[in-house]
Length: 133
Image (tube, rainbow, N blue to C red; front, side, top):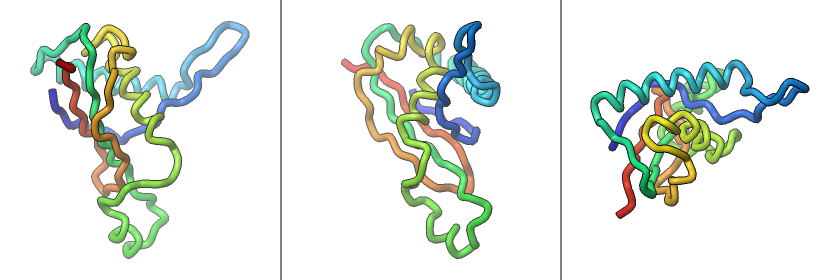
């Protein structure tokens, strides 16, 4: 299954711990809800669900900082992003949102294909999820 999500990529955030338990920060919880909504729409078309081992590939097109000059923006358009947050945090966010929609548990992801974070003037997430045979 291959899909493009028209959403600004955000990394997974650490849960907030209190004396009443742990919960996701509101901004991250809203982002997960938005991703789940998009994934549910994709599932209606693709009808993909697996309990087997999976391979995940994902390209995160992150927004170019607005404070950069036009020249600097043009230089970095389409280039790999080497600043924080880490790529693994972006991946964790989409794994969390996919869980229960495309697979039972994110522990089923046994292989990562091409994963990258790239600067883009059009932020989005492109991903591919497939069963390992």
